[in-house]
Each structure stands twice: as structure tokens, then as C-alpha cells.
Length: 161
Image (cartoon, rainbow, N blue to C red; front, side, top):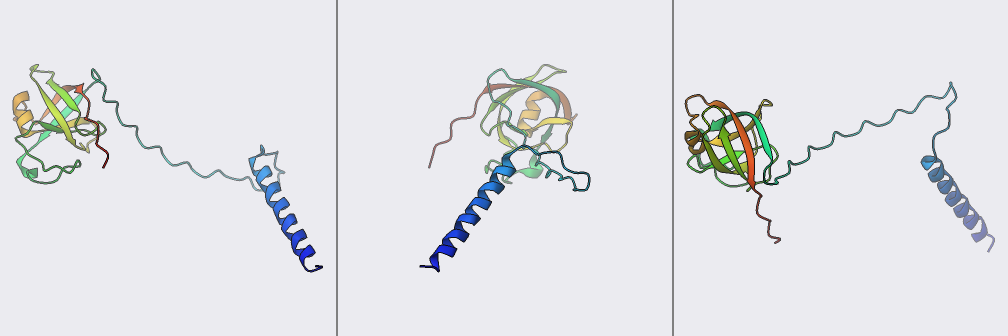
């Protein structure tokens, strides 16, 4: 029996020490003496950009480019194969399947496209459209236009497997 008492006492002492440490860690820091090194907080990770809301009527203006036959058949970020003849676009944050009305601000032509890819990688652009959408917008020659994007339909709800 004498053997168990010291083990029990040691376990209780260790538990008390852990509780004291936890309490001191959660308590506000007291002023540290000049001789003690100041603790530097760990750098916080940069927060991920929040996805853009896909509510109808949301609008965004900026530069828009197009991409075409060079990427035909390659998988897009959504997993679909890219078809330059489909009315689709790449956007940085809108959910896949979101329907967007794209308007060329110079000639006022517009087309409704579906988001199925991520991009563009250039920071000054708001999106890339397929070759078919670019033809309807009248931008095949210029390649880059000022455009207005307006969400007209949200992405369909995903079915749970």
C-alpha cells in the first residue's frame, strides 16, 4: 500500500501542474520583466478569399478575354471538357453552373453563359469566355474588351451521393 500512495500523490501533483499551466495560458499576459524575452505571436495564415455570392442581379465590370480551340477537349476546373462552341466562361470565384449575362460595354452586345472553369490568372481581368461567346459579343478580333457581368441564375444545388 505504501507503494501506491506516492504514485497517487505524483499523479495528483502532475494534474494540478497541468491545470495551473492551462489557467496561466488562458489568463491575460502580465507585464514581462525587461530581462525576459518578449514572446512573438505566430503569423496568422492568410484567409482564403470568400466565394462571390451568386445572387441574381450581382454585377461586376472589368476586362474580359476569350479562349478557344487551343484548349478544346481539355478538362476544365469543373471536370467538364472544354468546348469552344459552348456558351461558357471561366471566373475566379462564382460557383460552377452559375449563369451570367456578359455585356460588351462598347457595342452593347450581350450573351448568357455558364461558369464551368476557373480563371483568368491575370489580376486585371474579371473572366474569360469561350470562342462562341466571344463571337456573339463581337470581340474575336480585339481579344480583350471592357465588359459587365451580371448574375442571372444561381448554380443548381449539388446532389448528395
